[in-house]
Image (cartoon, rainbow, N blue to C red; front, side, top):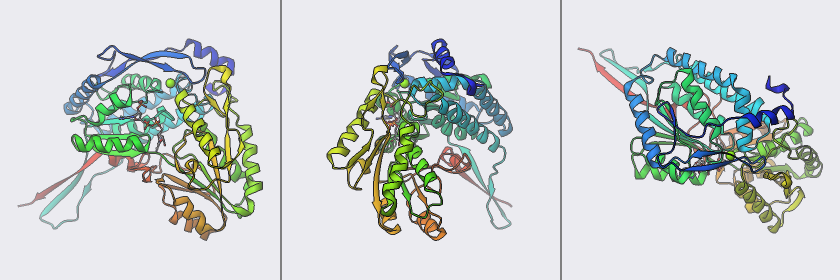
Length: 499
Ligand code: NAP
Ligand code: MG
């Protein structure tokens, strides 16, 4: 069991690890058509792990051709749902069997703690694939209520070729959130992982093939956003794009669609989650722990990170002390050490970006209470201290822009109406949280907060059965739950007159 592995065990395994580093197209690993590659750098220590194929237009073309051919052949799209279920369950089993390897690849590639890769990323990926496998022979089409001389069928059909473009913060899980429902409903997929984190996606493709997913049904083209990503977005033969990433790039995909074939676009974008704490929270210690984990988990590289802490003015001082206590416990460490709770930022660029925001917070007049600097620089890796600002105003850059790092902005309010108003004063609407024991205040907030998820007396609640996605500029379309299948299917009405 991976849970029992020590720091030394993980380091020894890391030395022996091998990497898939080519494009996976039509059931085979192939180099990029250009022969070009890019360095895959580990943020743990700045070391180059391997050179990965730099997929571009031509590689995307080949992948889309393979996906189209597989789709049109019916080898997967026409397979009985119970058969697709069987193959996808096998895929999930294979992911579970390779849990240690996949967790290690994820941690080395993007810097998250191995404890999280093993206890969260891998099991959640397995669970996601299993959920959609299990779902697919249990969802029925519809018959419309018509007069007796008509039978009207409402059929759900796969869209065809799906492009999935995903970010680096949960590389494997974000891929699974697209692959699960897209494959279960019978589509073929071309997946582009983020350039910072291609390794688990490539290994997943190989495991999918071993599980029996036919050639061409799942293709992976690693590469850069402006190249492979844009080629998918503008492709005339891609029917839908499912994107997770920044709001800025999400807008590009809308443009790509409009300028090409009006492909369906679903966007899971950024957030600036307000975390509201009222004085009557049932346990302020628990709330404080959640406030700290809500921003420092995964180095703050979480779309729904609780980056704006809104605390009632009457309890701000003691509450912030408690949050800082938890924050100090989360100081970054080597991601391969099972005791580490905060790892490395994904790359040097992201680290510099976050440090830049910290400078902006200071120069805007916010009070730096904790952290604020780089850590463990002697390792060659990219680490940042857990950072907390107080006296933040909601119009400061650090309260408005998504930092995507371990930086908490603390604001105060006088009453609930003000809290909800400030919480909603953002372009984002991915998630929001509130702590209170007053059912009226909780429900008024749950209704009043403009966000795709509202958590009451918890943070980051939910599981695969509940939809996840944004309001406003956090995007549209939902991942997880049966609703996620809407993105990958079209409705067809068949109206039959009886004579
Ligand atoms: P990003 O820069 O938007 O990149 C996301 C993906 O889009 C990557 O694969 C990227 O390729 C690609 N891309 C970049 N520029 C592109 C372009 N011009 N055309 C086509 N594709 C392009 O986001 P990120 O920095 O990887 O991830 C952080 C963002 O993701 C944050 O904003 C976060 O909130 C969001 N996120 C949202 C959710 C959610 O469910 N709502 C979940 C996780 C993350 P490269 O390989 O070149 O980077
Ligand atoms: Mg990497």
